Every structure is written in structure tokens, then in C-alpha cells.
Amino acid sequence: MADSAGEEPTAPVHSAPSISDANALWQRWQGFLQQSSTYRELLAEQQAGWQCKDLDVVYSAIVKENAGGPTSFAKADPGLLCRRYRLHASKILARAHPALFARSCSTLGAKPNQFLDLGSAPGGVSHFLHSDLNWTGTAVTLSPEHGGIPMHPVHARTESLRICYADLRNETEVAASLEQHVKANERPFRFVNCGAVQDHGQREQEKPTDGASTVVVIGDLLVAQLRVAFRYVQDGGDVMFVFGSTKSGAFFLLLSLLQPVVDQITLLETLFVVKAPVYVLLSGVHPSRVPDALWDRLTGPSTYWLLDEPESWDQAVASFALYGPQLEHIWHLATGVLKDRRIRASQQRDTGVKRGRDIV
Ligand SMILES: C[S@@+](CC[C@H](N)C(=O)[O-])C[C@H]1O[C@@H](n2cnc3c(N)ncnc32)[C@H](O)[C@@H]1O
Image (tube, rainbow, N blue to C red; front, side, top):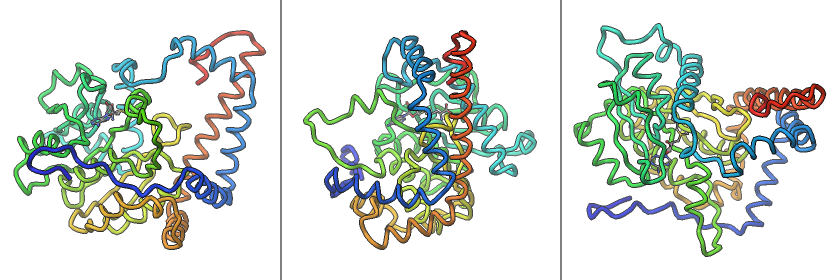
């Protein structure tokens, strides 16, 4: 944690097992997951996609369109991304918690709910909350000078959103931004969205150059966002976060650690359903129930997170029994999208019409 001298927060320290041990532990969990027929269907469809020459043609056309560069938020069209995130947020949140997020529940005339949107740019989720639901909010996101994407200009025209540029991993900087508007010990936010994720370009920049490799299971960006969320969310409020790898046992361990703190956990697909991350919506969050031990765990040894301890293996298996069916639903959606792409790529070969972007 940062001290009053304003030092950078310390990154989680993991006693990293060797890469080969980590691989063996990963394979063990993969073996467990393969008991799920839905998971096996997803793996089979992925395999069919990798072997599909017609899809190779489609992807290489897209790589050419992008001039071969790595995908990066900084290069994306913020207007288009903002619209897509806004629509997606309205779809999944209204489905998961209609009493709070359905448009018919917008707070016109009443005192508006407040939200905190972390990693907010380009601003789709914020746009949904302040424009469609009439909430007011605070958005915290990485400045474009530090590699973040800009907030869409539409947000400059509203008084319902306050925008702060800060690096969420710098706890001192974030607290200073928020404490200008939030009184000490106040918990104003009905909903906190933890949406900051590093894009490919950021990860490449931050890769150690000395060849050192560490096994990071729960990233420091997620831990930093959960700390902010649990500090500022109202008792009984909602928190949503993105988790990168649902094929890991660590995902289910995290859910089991959060279970006592919340009334309900809902897993939701991201905008890119075929990619690994999912959204986790925590409804009815009780911050007073968050034990200090949670933070010790989150920043603790990776042997626990890699299921190298009997206790953590059993905990992950029990958590899969509870939350696995929700994830299987998302895997099923992903299998459908992948299959559809493969079929359309083959149809493109047969018709000779080239439409790369329409297919993926
Ligand atoms: C997937 S985008 C979020 C999309 C957003 N929720 C929306 O609805 O438009 C991820 C965001 O996290 C931001 N980000 C990445 N690292 C960050 C950091 N350390 N601190 C603050 N924001 C960060 C990126 O700049 C980007 O704006």
C-alpha cells in the first residue's frame, strides 16, 4: 500500500513456482474442466477453427487491414467502441439486475443513483448509466499521455459525469482524485464498475526486458480496483469487474472468496464473447464483511492460486459446482459464435465474395 510520502503501491509479491510447475498445475485443472461436455465442445470448435484454412484466409486479410500492428485500445475508434460498450452494458446489466439497471427504472425526478466507473474510457458504460438511466457518476481512467484511450467527447457535454485521469495502480493518486468529491467515510456509489484492463500494447510496454518471467495469477490492476470498489460502494450496492482467464482454477477460488461478502454473483459475457475474459457482477455487496484476509490472499503466494495446495484445489472444485453452470452458458455462446464464423468463412470461399470484417 502507498504511504503518505506518495510512493508507488507495491506490486503483489508472488512466490513464483517455476514455469514448468505452473504448466503442470494448469494442465491438472484443464483435466478437471474437461469433465464438462460444454467445455469439451468449446475446445473442439476452437480446434476446428485452427484447422480451418478458410478462416486463415479471413484472418490474414484482417491483419493486412490493420497493417499487422498489435491490437491496442489507443488505435481503436473511440466513437465506435463507446457505442458498442454502451449497448452491451445496457443489455447484460438490465438482464442480470433489472430492478437496478432496466431503463424503466431510470431515476427521472428522483435523486439519481451515483456510479463510479474505473478504467472508463472510451466511456460506453458511463454513457449508459448517465444518459440512459439518468444517474450521475465519476469516471477514473488512464490519461492518453500514459497510454490510455481518451474519453469520447460526448462526455464533455454532460454535467452528470466527472472525469478524473489517474493510474488506478497508484492508490495515492486515485484516493486524492476521489477525495476531492467524496467525504471521509462516505460510501456514495450504488454501482462501481471495475473495467480497467491492460491492452496488448500496454502489456508489451511493461514486459520485463531482462528476460525475467514471473507467474502472476491475480493482476495488481484487479486488486487495486477491488480495493477502491469495496472502499466506496454503498452497503448493498453492486460491483462489476472483468476477470481475464476463466479457464484457470484461480477464477473459481476468487469467486469462493467473494461469496461471503455478497448476496449474489452473476457471470456475464463480455463484448467479445469468444475471448477469455468474463464480467463478474457482485450484487448486494457488504463491504463490512470484507475480511483483511481477502487482501492477504489476493497478494499472497501463487501456490494457492495455482491450486498447488489441497485446500485450494477442493475450494476451486466446490466453487465450480456452484458457478460452473453460469460459465458453461457463456462457453456455449462462444462455441456458437466460433462455429458460425467457421461456416461463414467456408461459404465465402464458395461464393468468392471477400468480407473479412463481417465474419469476425
Ligand atoms: C476495455 S477498456 C474499458 C471500456 C469501458 N468500460 C467502456 O465502457 O467504454 C479498458 C480501459 O482501462 C484503461 N486502463 C488500463 N490500465 C489502466 C490503469 N492502470 N489505470 C486506469 N485505467 C486503465 C484503458 O485505458 C481503457 O480505457
